[in-house]
Each structure stands twice: as structure tokens, then as C-alpha cells.
Amino acid sequence: MMLLLCCHFCGAGFQPALFFCAAMLYNVPMCTTDKTRGVFAATVLENRPLCDEHYLIRLQTPGFPATEAGQFVQLQCRPNAIPDAIRVVDWTDDAPPKLTGGEIADGEPLLRRPLSLAGRDGDILDIIYRVVGRGTGWLQRAAAGTELTILGPLGAPFPIPDTISQAILVGGGVGIPPMLYLAKALNAAGVQTTAICGARTAGLMPLATDDSGQSVEFSARGAHSILCTDDGTLGRGGLVTEPLAELLAAADDPAAVAVYSCGPEIMMKYVGLATTDAGAQCFLSLERSMACGMGTCQGCIVKIKDDSERGWNYKLCCSDGPVFPAESILWE
Image: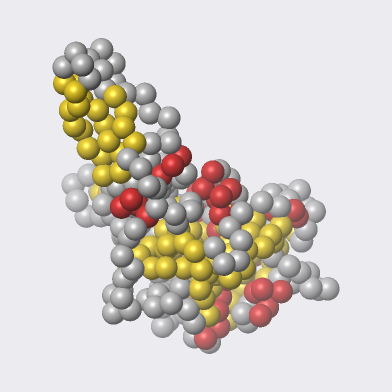
């Protein structure tokens, strides 16, 4: 995207004006397959509802680099069409220009949306998202065959230490999708896994259940599951931290246990505190507002403990994270 401050003749003299050219937002060269990340073409294969407000979108992304559980992508949430005109907005001497949003990207969402990966099968990426605004609202309407661009893979993945034999996954709301990808990786590594998944109510749980109340999706990935809802309409009533405490207390060797979590920050704070107090390892996938996803905008800061005089420093959620060891995070 180019934003030019120029002067044009308006009869009374030269006046500054803003010229918006959005073509660069759309006509981005696709990266070749020898790169570890970049902008790639994607085609929607499927986009279907899972529960209230939650959707699964499957994207075919030829040449997309290797990915790991815990990484994310920045997904275009606007049409691929290239605008055919430059917008001109006058800037008078006595007032700055009044912008309405239509000057850039035809009023469509300008920034890509950061979304975690729920899984991958060859060049097909699975993403589960919740409709919360204009960007994801547009994405909800993207039918099969829609062409998008996708930036990624981004961020640091979940580590799987060689020393663990048991894993506990704690996902809340839209923090559940990366747990699905991680469960598959843990199963491949031979790690016994239990997934604890929470939502406010049954209608907001993006998982299917079998006759025994187990998540169909986690069972397919070799994991036992415990579902919780705040109002008790599905699974256990109450907070995900309650079954977590029970599993930690029952562990024969807490040092051989790793807890992974993604979801509301207050939930992850208490998951991290409970886990480290029990002597187990804990890795948290944090969420911040991200404009670029690559560390350029410096907007997704996280306070991380270190050995400096003040005892902490800023790290970037997008590039240093989003996964951090729980004991390293300085909670507000």
C-alpha cells in the first residue's frame, strides 16, 4: 500500500492531498517453496460452522512451508480483487483530511487476521475461528473456491521435551484449535495426553462428542478429553483449572508432565501458577493484537523475566512467542 503526500493545483494555489494506492496490498508476489515463510496463495476448500459463532475453514496452500503445532498464520479477510483507481483526499490549510476507511482497500479490512493452526494434511491447512468483527465476518462468507493470500508460518511452536511421558492440554474457547494440532504431534511422539477444554456454554464448544462424552476430534488424535462449561450445559460444570488440579495431584512424577495451554489470559495465568507449583513444566500460547505477525510493528509486547537489573524485558508475542514457558511470564 502506498500513501503519498503530494500537492495539486486547486485554483487558489497548490494544496496538499493524500493519494491512496492500495494495489500493493493485493498484488503481492507469491513466495517460492524454498522459503521458511512468506505470502502464499490459498483456496478455500471448505468453510462450515462447528457451533455458535465458530467455523472451520480448510485452505489448500500449495508450497506452504513446514509447520508445527503452536504456530499461526496471518490470513487475508477481504477480496483478492485489485482496486482500479487511486483515491485522492484533499488536505486543507485549516483541517486535516477526514478519512472514512474507503480510501484504503475499498473499505474492506486492511490488516490480516492472526489465526492459529488447528491441523494440517499435506498442503491443506485447518483453521478454526470465531466470528467477532468485520474481518472474521467477511471470512465467514468466503465460499469454497474463494482465493485468498496467507502469510506464514509464523511464531515459535510448542516444544515437546524428551523428558516427558504425560501431557495435559488446557484450551479455552478459541484456544482449543492449537491443542488439536498439538495432540496429534504428542500422539506421534508417544506421549500420553489428556485434553481439558472449556467454554462458557455448550453452544460455544467447537467440538463434537461421542456417546461417552469424549471429544470426537481429540479421540481421533489419541487423546482422552475432559469437557467443561461454565454453566454445566456440557460435560463438567465449572472451570478447567479444577480437573487440571486433579490430574496434577494424581501424577506419579510431576517432572515428567508437561502442561500446554491456550485461551483467555486469566485462565492461562492460573494454569501456569498451578502447574509450576506442582513441579511440572508448562508452556502457554499467549494472545495479543498483531498487525504484522513478524515483529515489525512492535505492537504485541509481553513482559518476560530475565537477569537484568529490573528483572524483566519486553518480548514480542508474534516472533519470540506466542509460546512461552509459564515461569518466564511476568503477569500484570
